[in-house]
Amino acid sequence: MRKIQTTIFDVLYSDERTLIKEEYANLRKKQSDGYMNANFFRRNMFNATARGERIQYKRPKIVWETKTDKVSISHSLHQKHADVLSLIHTDCIMVSKPDSTGGYNIYLSLYAIAKSMGYKYPSKSTNKVKQFINDLRWTDFIEHKKDGKYHTTILGDALFSEEQDVFIISIKGKCAKILAHTTGIKISKELTHKIVAIPDNLVKLKSMVRFIISNKPTLNGYSMSFLFDKFDIGNSGNLQVQRNSKSVFRKQLKNNENLLNSFNINFNVDEDKIYYFEQLKQIKFELAVNQNPQKIIDKIEAADIEEIEYPQIGKKLLIVDIVYEVIDIISNDDGTYDFKLKNLEENIIGTSRNGDLDNLNKHIQNFIDPTVLNMLEKTK
Image 1: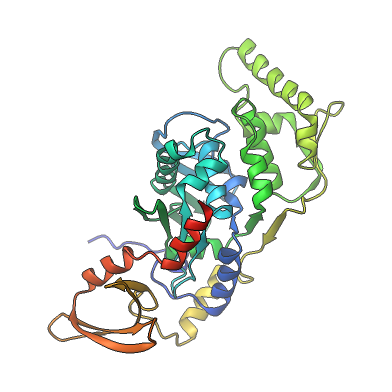
Image 2: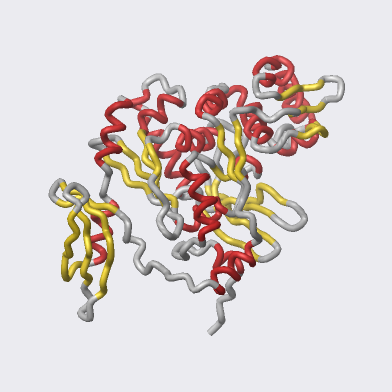
Protein backbone atom coordinates (compact mmCIF):
# COMPACT_ATOMS: atom_id res chain seq x y z
CA MET A 1 0.00 0.00 0.00
CA ARG A 2 1.30 3.42 -0.94
CA LYS A 3 2.11 5.57 2.08
CA ILE A 4 0.42 8.97 2.03
CA GLN A 5 2.98 11.70 2.56
CA THR A 6 2.08 14.43 4.98
CA THR A 7 3.43 17.97 4.77
CA ILE A 8 4.05 20.61 7.37
CA PHE A 9 0.69 22.16 6.40
CA ASP A 10 -1.22 18.92 7.06
CA VAL A 11 -0.14 19.28 10.68
CA LEU A 12 -0.26 23.08 10.96
CA TYR A 13 -3.71 23.48 9.43
CA SER A 14 -5.34 20.30 10.70
CA ASP A 15 -9.04 20.99 11.35
CA GLU A 16 -9.08 19.27 14.74
CA ARG A 17 -5.70 20.36 16.12
CA THR A 18 -5.90 22.45 19.28
CA LEU A 19 -4.44 25.93 18.93
CA ILE A 20 -1.47 26.93 21.04
CA LYS A 21 -1.89 30.16 23.01
CA GLU A 22 0.00 32.36 20.51
CA GLU A 23 -2.24 31.22 17.67
CA TYR A 24 -5.41 31.62 19.73
CA ALA A 25 -4.51 35.19 20.76
CA ASN A 26 -3.75 36.17 17.16
CA LEU A 27 -6.93 34.57 15.82
CA ARG A 28 -9.14 36.01 18.57
CA LYS A 29 -7.95 39.53 17.76
CA LYS A 30 -8.63 39.07 14.05
CA GLN A 31 -11.97 37.28 14.10
CA SER A 32 -13.56 39.41 16.83
CA ASP A 33 -12.59 42.65 15.03
CA GLY A 34 -13.68 41.59 11.53
CA TYR A 35 -10.28 40.94 9.94
CA MET A 36 -10.12 38.95 6.69
CA ASN A 37 -7.23 37.16 5.07
CA ALA A 38 -5.52 39.94 3.07
CA ASN A 39 -4.53 37.41 0.42
CA PHE A 40 -8.17 37.18 -0.69
CA PHE A 41 -7.68 40.49 -2.50
CA ARG A 42 -3.92 40.42 -3.05
CA ARG A 43 -3.80 37.21 -5.08
CA ASN A 44 -6.40 37.49 -7.87
CA MET A 45 -8.88 35.10 -6.25
CA PHE A 46 -11.72 37.18 -7.74
CA ASN A 47 -11.95 38.02 -11.44
CA ALA A 48 -12.25 41.69 -12.45
CA THR A 49 -15.80 41.09 -13.69
CA ALA A 50 -19.24 41.67 -12.18
CA ARG A 51 -21.40 39.04 -13.87
CA GLY A 52 -21.40 35.43 -14.90
CA GLU A 53 -22.13 32.10 -13.26
CA ARG A 54 -19.54 30.26 -11.23
CA ILE A 55 -17.84 27.93 -13.71
CA GLN A 56 -15.64 24.96 -12.86
CA TYR A 57 -12.29 25.01 -14.60
CA LYS A 58 -11.16 21.82 -16.36
CA ARG A 59 -8.19 21.91 -14.03
CA PRO A 60 -7.54 24.40 -11.18
CA LYS A 61 -6.60 27.75 -12.69
CA ILE A 62 -3.39 29.43 -11.49
CA VAL A 63 -4.38 32.95 -10.41
CA TRP A 64 -1.18 34.05 -8.67
CA GLU A 65 2.40 32.87 -8.93
CA THR A 66 5.94 33.71 -7.82
CA LYS A 67 9.18 31.77 -8.11
CA THR A 68 8.37 29.71 -5.00
CA ASP A 69 4.60 30.00 -4.42
CA LYS A 70 1.40 29.87 -6.41
CA VAL A 71 -2.35 29.84 -5.84
CA SER A 72 -4.87 27.98 -8.01
CA ILE A 73 -8.66 27.99 -7.86
CA SER A 74 -11.27 25.37 -8.83
CA HIS A 75 -14.06 27.71 -9.99
CA SER A 76 -14.45 31.24 -11.31
CA LEU A 77 -15.46 33.94 -8.83
CA HIS A 78 -16.01 37.64 -9.53
CA GLN A 79 -16.39 41.00 -7.77
CA LYS A 80 -19.95 40.34 -6.56
CA HIS A 81 -18.52 37.41 -4.61
CA ALA A 82 -15.86 39.76 -3.24
CA ASP A 83 -18.59 42.24 -2.26
CA VAL A 84 -20.46 39.55 -0.32
CA LEU A 85 -17.31 38.30 1.40
CA SER A 86 -16.44 41.83 2.52
CA LEU A 87 -19.97 42.53 3.77
CA ILE A 88 -20.07 39.25 5.72
CA HIS A 89 -17.26 40.67 7.85
CA THR A 90 -18.54 44.26 8.19
CA ASP A 91 -22.32 43.81 8.27
CA CYS A 92 -22.64 40.59 10.28
CA ILE A 93 -24.71 40.58 13.45
CA MET A 94 -22.03 38.91 15.54
CA VAL A 95 -19.32 36.25 15.59
CA SER A 96 -19.00 33.49 18.17
CA LYS A 97 -15.93 32.90 20.28
CA PRO A 98 -13.48 30.44 18.68
CA ASP A 99 -13.41 26.91 20.03
CA SER A 100 -10.18 25.09 20.89
CA THR A 101 -9.53 24.28 17.20
CA GLY A 102 -10.12 27.89 16.14
CA GLY A 103 -13.50 27.24 14.52
CA TYR A 104 -16.21 29.86 14.97
CA ASN A 105 -19.57 30.98 13.53
CA ILE A 106 -20.60 34.20 11.79
CA TYR A 107 -24.24 35.29 12.16
CA LEU A 108 -25.73 37.52 9.48
CA SER A 109 -28.90 38.72 7.80
CA LEU A 110 -29.22 38.02 4.08
CA TYR A 111 -31.59 40.99 3.84
CA ALA A 112 -28.97 43.34 5.34
CA ILE A 113 -26.30 42.07 2.92
CA ALA A 114 -28.64 42.49 -0.07
CA LYS A 115 -29.50 46.01 1.07
CA SER A 116 -25.83 46.96 1.42
CA MET A 117 -25.20 45.61 -2.09
CA GLY A 118 -27.65 48.16 -3.43
CA TYR A 119 -30.37 45.85 -4.69
CA LYS A 120 -33.59 47.79 -5.29
CA TYR A 121 -35.69 45.10 -3.58
CA PRO A 122 -33.47 43.51 -0.91
CA SER A 123 -36.13 41.09 0.30
CA LYS A 124 -36.40 39.65 -3.22
CA SER A 125 -32.62 39.47 -3.64
CA THR A 126 -31.69 37.32 -0.63
CA ASN A 127 -31.49 34.21 -2.83
CA LYS A 128 -28.83 35.94 -4.94
CA VAL A 129 -26.81 36.63 -1.81
CA LYS A 130 -27.28 33.05 -0.64
CA GLN A 131 -26.01 31.77 -3.99
CA PHE A 132 -22.92 33.99 -3.79
CA ILE A 133 -22.26 32.60 -0.30
CA ASN A 134 -22.65 29.02 -1.54
CA ASP A 135 -20.30 29.76 -4.45
CA LEU A 136 -17.69 30.86 -1.90
CA ARG A 137 -18.32 27.75 0.21
CA TRP A 138 -18.00 25.36 -2.72
CA THR A 139 -14.87 26.79 -4.36
CA ASP A 140 -11.51 25.19 -3.59
CA PHE A 141 -8.28 27.13 -3.29
CA ILE A 142 -4.98 25.31 -3.59
CA GLU A 143 -1.91 27.04 -2.19
CA HIS A 144 1.44 25.68 -3.36
CA LYS A 145 4.52 26.49 -1.28
CA LYS A 146 8.06 25.17 -1.23
CA ASP A 147 7.22 23.01 1.81
CA GLY A 148 4.11 21.50 0.22
CA LYS A 149 0.57 22.43 -0.74
CA TYR A 150 -2.83 22.56 0.93
CA HIS A 151 -6.48 22.88 -0.11
CA THR A 152 -8.97 25.17 1.59
CA THR A 153 -12.28 26.97 1.11
CA ILE A 154 -13.09 30.52 2.20
CA LEU A 155 -16.29 29.60 4.08
CA GLY A 156 -17.53 26.40 5.69
CA ASP A 157 -21.00 24.98 6.33
CA ALA A 158 -24.00 27.29 6.51
CA LEU A 159 -27.28 26.91 8.37
CA PHE A 160 -30.22 28.98 7.15
CA SER A 161 -33.35 29.67 9.19
CA GLU A 162 -36.08 30.83 6.80
CA GLU A 163 -38.35 31.81 9.68
CA GLN A 164 -35.81 34.21 11.17
CA ASP A 165 -33.92 34.98 7.92
CA VAL A 166 -30.61 34.26 9.65
CA PHE A 167 -27.56 32.71 8.07
CA ILE A 168 -25.01 31.05 10.32
CA ILE A 169 -21.73 30.51 8.50
CA SER A 170 -19.19 28.14 9.99
CA ILE A 171 -15.49 28.94 9.75
CA LYS A 172 -13.71 25.62 10.22
CA GLY A 173 -10.57 25.13 12.29
CA LYS A 174 -8.45 24.87 9.14
CA CYS A 175 -9.58 28.24 7.74
CA ALA A 176 -9.21 29.84 11.16
CA LYS A 177 -5.64 28.57 11.50
CA ILE A 178 -4.78 29.90 8.03
CA LEU A 179 -6.11 33.32 9.12
CA ALA A 180 -3.89 33.20 12.22
CA HIS A 181 -0.85 32.40 10.05
CA THR A 182 -1.41 35.10 7.41
CA THR A 183 -1.72 38.88 7.41
CA GLY A 184 -5.24 40.01 8.27
CA ILE A 185 -6.91 43.12 6.86
CA LYS A 186 -9.72 45.08 8.49
CA ILE A 187 -11.64 47.42 6.19
CA SER A 188 -14.13 49.70 7.94
CA LYS A 189 -17.85 49.29 7.25
CA GLU A 190 -18.04 52.74 5.68
CA LEU A 191 -15.12 52.06 3.32
CA THR A 192 -16.45 48.61 2.42
CA HIS A 193 -19.82 50.10 1.44
CA LYS A 194 -18.00 52.70 -0.65
CA ILE A 195 -16.13 49.97 -2.57
CA VAL A 196 -19.27 47.85 -2.99
CA ALA A 197 -21.06 50.92 -4.42
CA ILE A 198 -18.61 51.25 -7.33
CA PRO A 199 -20.88 50.49 -10.33
CA ASP A 200 -20.57 47.39 -12.48
CA ASN A 201 -19.46 49.41 -15.53
CA LEU A 202 -16.34 50.34 -13.51
CA VAL A 203 -15.68 46.80 -12.26
CA LYS A 204 -12.03 46.88 -13.42
CA LEU A 205 -11.51 49.96 -11.22
CA LYS A 206 -13.26 48.23 -8.32
CA SER A 207 -10.97 45.23 -8.63
CA MET A 208 -7.93 47.51 -8.85
CA VAL A 209 -8.99 49.49 -5.77
CA ARG A 210 -9.43 46.28 -3.75
CA PHE A 211 -6.01 45.02 -4.77
CA ILE A 212 -4.14 48.28 -4.15
CA ILE A 213 -5.59 49.14 -0.74
CA SER A 214 -5.11 45.57 0.52
CA ASN A 215 -1.36 46.11 0.04
CA LYS A 216 0.91 48.57 1.76
CA PRO A 217 1.56 51.94 0.03
CA THR A 218 4.46 51.95 -2.40
CA LEU A 219 6.64 54.72 -3.83
CA ASN A 220 7.26 52.72 -7.00
CA GLY A 221 3.65 52.74 -8.18
CA TYR A 222 2.00 50.32 -10.57
CA SER A 223 2.71 50.37 -14.30
CA MET A 224 -0.09 50.03 -16.85
CA SER A 225 1.43 46.82 -18.20
CA PHE A 226 1.27 45.34 -14.69
CA LEU A 227 -2.39 46.35 -14.25
CA PHE A 228 -3.36 45.14 -17.73
CA ASP A 229 -1.95 41.72 -16.92
CA LYS A 230 -3.30 41.70 -13.36
CA PHE A 231 -6.90 42.43 -14.32
CA ASP A 232 -6.95 40.72 -17.72
CA ILE A 233 -7.31 43.93 -19.74
CA GLY A 234 -6.56 43.68 -23.45
CA ASN A 235 -5.24 40.13 -23.21
CA SER A 236 -7.69 38.54 -25.66
CA GLY A 237 -9.20 39.23 -29.05
CA ASN A 238 -7.52 40.71 -32.11
CA LEU A 239 -5.03 43.55 -31.86
CA GLN A 240 -7.68 46.26 -32.29
CA VAL A 241 -9.90 44.76 -29.57
CA GLN A 242 -6.91 44.62 -27.21
CA ARG A 243 -6.05 48.27 -27.90
CA ASN A 244 -9.67 49.34 -27.35
CA SER A 245 -9.85 47.52 -24.00
CA LYS A 246 -6.71 49.24 -22.77
CA SER A 247 -7.90 52.62 -24.07
CA VAL A 248 -11.25 52.23 -22.25
CA PHE A 249 -9.45 51.44 -18.97
CA ARG A 250 -7.18 54.48 -19.28
CA LYS A 251 -10.22 56.64 -20.03
CA GLN A 252 -11.99 55.32 -16.93
CA LEU A 253 -8.93 56.19 -14.84
CA LYS A 254 -8.95 59.78 -16.18
CA ASN A 255 -12.72 60.26 -15.87
CA ASN A 256 -12.90 58.95 -12.30
CA GLU A 257 -10.05 60.90 -10.75
CA ASN A 258 -12.15 62.04 -7.77
CA LEU A 259 -13.28 58.50 -7.03
CA LEU A 260 -9.71 57.19 -7.12
CA ASN A 261 -8.41 60.10 -5.02
CA SER A 262 -10.98 59.25 -2.33
CA PHE A 263 -9.05 55.97 -1.92
CA ASN A 264 -5.67 57.80 -1.92
CA ILE A 265 -5.07 56.44 -5.41
CA ASN A 266 -3.63 58.72 -8.11
CA PHE A 267 -3.31 58.21 -11.86
CA ASN A 268 -0.19 59.97 -13.17
CA VAL A 269 -1.00 60.45 -16.85
CA ASP A 270 2.51 61.59 -17.79
CA GLU A 271 4.15 58.51 -16.24
CA ASP A 272 1.21 56.25 -17.16
CA LYS A 273 1.33 54.80 -13.63
CA ILE A 274 -0.94 54.39 -10.61
CA TYR A 275 0.30 55.54 -7.19
CA TYR A 276 -0.88 54.76 -3.67
CA PHE A 277 1.33 56.79 -1.34
CA GLU A 278 -0.58 56.80 1.96
CA GLN A 279 -2.55 54.04 3.65
CA LEU A 280 -6.19 54.80 4.27
CA LYS A 281 -7.09 55.40 7.92
CA GLN A 282 -10.10 53.08 7.56
CA ILE A 283 -7.77 50.12 6.96
CA LYS A 284 -5.81 48.17 9.56
CA PHE A 285 -3.48 45.22 9.19
CA GLU A 286 -2.74 42.49 11.73
CA LEU A 287 0.35 40.39 11.10
CA ALA A 288 0.56 36.61 11.21
CA VAL A 289 1.61 34.70 14.31
CA ASN A 290 5.15 35.83 14.98
CA GLN A 291 6.72 32.39 14.53
CA ASN A 292 7.48 30.26 11.51
CA PRO A 293 5.32 27.15 10.97
CA GLN A 294 8.00 24.67 12.00
CA LYS A 295 8.49 26.41 15.35
CA ILE A 296 4.74 26.22 15.97
CA ILE A 297 4.80 22.48 15.26
CA ASP A 298 7.85 22.05 17.51
CA LYS A 299 5.93 23.80 20.31
CA ILE A 300 2.95 21.53 19.80
CA GLU A 301 5.14 18.45 20.04
CA ALA A 302 7.30 19.75 22.91
CA ALA A 303 4.47 21.03 25.08
CA ASP A 304 2.29 18.38 26.66
CA ILE A 305 -0.91 19.94 25.37
CA GLU A 306 -4.04 18.35 26.72
CA GLU A 307 -6.24 17.92 23.69
CA ILE A 308 -9.95 18.56 24.09
CA GLU A 309 -11.28 15.32 22.67
CA TYR A 310 -14.71 16.61 21.80
CA PRO A 311 -15.16 19.89 19.87
CA GLN A 312 -18.78 19.98 21.12
CA ILE A 313 -17.54 21.04 24.56
CA GLY A 314 -18.30 24.72 25.10
CA LYS A 315 -21.06 24.72 22.46
CA LYS A 316 -24.69 25.60 23.21
CA LEU A 317 -27.99 23.89 22.43
CA LEU A 318 -31.67 24.53 23.04
CA ILE A 319 -33.87 21.94 24.80
CA VAL A 320 -37.52 22.83 25.53
CA ASP A 321 -36.81 26.59 25.32
CA ILE A 322 -33.86 26.33 27.75
CA VAL A 323 -30.30 27.10 26.64
CA TYR A 324 -27.65 24.64 27.82
CA GLU A 325 -23.87 24.63 27.44
CA VAL A 326 -21.95 21.39 26.98
CA ILE A 327 -19.49 21.19 29.91
CA ASP A 328 -18.08 17.69 29.44
CA ILE A 329 -18.60 14.45 27.51
CA ILE A 330 -17.87 11.01 28.95
CA SER A 331 -17.81 7.95 26.69
CA ASN A 332 -19.41 4.74 27.97
CA ASP A 333 -18.40 1.14 27.25
CA ASP A 334 -21.66 0.47 25.38
CA GLY A 335 -20.94 3.21 22.80
CA THR A 336 -23.23 5.81 24.35
CA TYR A 337 -22.18 9.07 25.97
CA ASP A 338 -22.99 10.99 29.13
CA PHE A 339 -23.30 14.73 28.54
CA LYS A 340 -22.64 17.14 31.38
CA LEU A 341 -24.84 20.16 30.61
CA LYS A 342 -25.14 23.55 32.28
CA ASN A 343 -28.56 25.23 32.42
CA LEU A 344 -27.51 28.82 31.63
CA GLU A 345 -30.76 30.29 32.91
CA GLU A 346 -30.64 28.71 36.38
CA ASN A 347 -26.85 28.14 36.48
CA ILE A 348 -27.36 24.43 37.33
CA ILE A 349 -25.20 21.58 36.02
CA GLY A 350 -26.74 18.17 35.33
CA THR A 351 -25.93 15.03 33.35
CA SER A 352 -27.84 13.57 30.42
CA ARG A 353 -26.95 9.87 30.30
CA ASN A 354 -26.61 7.29 27.52
CA GLY A 355 -26.86 9.87 24.74
CA ASP A 356 -25.86 9.85 21.08
CA LEU A 357 -23.18 12.16 19.63
CA ASP A 358 -24.96 12.57 16.30
CA ASN A 359 -28.12 13.70 18.08
CA LEU A 360 -26.08 16.17 20.16
CA ASN A 361 -24.44 17.52 17.02
CA LYS A 362 -27.86 18.13 15.41
CA HIS A 363 -29.00 20.13 18.45
CA ILE A 364 -25.77 22.18 18.37
CA GLN A 365 -25.95 22.73 14.60
CA ASN A 366 -29.58 23.93 14.81
CA PHE A 367 -28.95 26.23 17.77
CA ILE A 368 -29.50 29.93 17.18
CA ASP A 369 -28.65 32.10 20.18
CA PRO A 370 -31.79 34.02 21.31
CA THR A 371 -29.64 37.15 21.78
CA VAL A 372 -28.73 36.94 18.09
CA LEU A 373 -32.39 36.81 17.14
CA ASN A 374 -33.09 39.81 19.35
CA MET A 375 -30.28 41.74 17.68
CA LEU A 376 -31.62 40.73 14.27
CA GLU A 377 -35.11 42.00 15.11
CA LYS A 378 -33.62 45.40 15.99
CA THR A 379 -31.98 45.65 12.56
CA LYS A 380 -35.27 45.15 10.70
